[in-house]
Length: 101
Image (cartoon, rainbow, N blue to C red):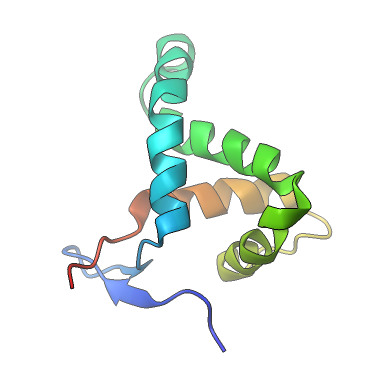
């Protein structure tokens, strides 16, 4: 059974539907993005902040089940390329689509 549902965004891209966990991460990372953007530029700053936050969340065993599912959605081999998987997961969260009920 798939944990994440997929949707098509306005650009015709396949994206994930935003879950409450994803929304919470985006909210928490908004303020963290600002120092990253000042130092490295705005391009990709939000995704970098999300990626760093995901790494911190992964340290807590309670968050691992849903994070493992999210990392599987990236299609990256987490045994060899864990940091790349977190970057891809951050991109998935950033591009996720809010579905109105």
